[in-house]
Length: 192
Image 1: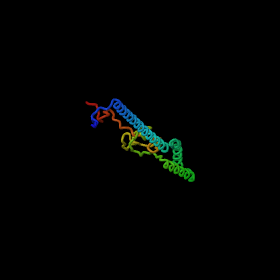
Image 2: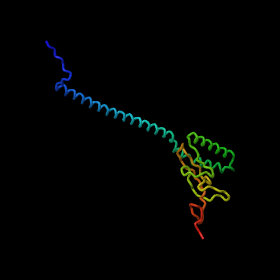
Image 3: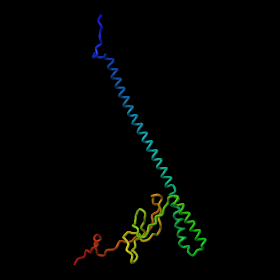
Image 4: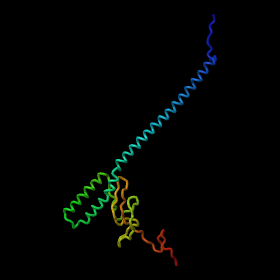
């Protein structure tokens, strides 16, 4: 008897080839869908993480600036108390002491709420982000002031953390006038 050996390179029957191709196609389709679902899942995770971060930032801002309206409404009270204290030199000592204690208590409450004064010193450079110029004046005689430097503070300003609630109301020094001269060079443009 003769044995027949299978041929290693013999072509597979037509039915088996179509099954292999359809299985490979199904596998490729399944892998493509799997990749799409993985990308969609990654986007959903990233969106949820971003929403969580935004919510956390909103809560922090609400805690940080939640007292803003209350602080703004208390600023005129502090102004009035400080004005009363400044004019209470002839008032009875008990009244003056009561006003001083009230001002100190309100200042302590402002400090606990991170509400700080904006009280620039005379000669300090004008900062439009923290100060509001109410007038430009000539410097007092004998004093040399830089142009746009603060001459006097009319009303203190306040900030809550880094946000300005009320700018300091100030008067600033006028720039020196150069009569008949060039505003750029400072020299006169008249010639003989």
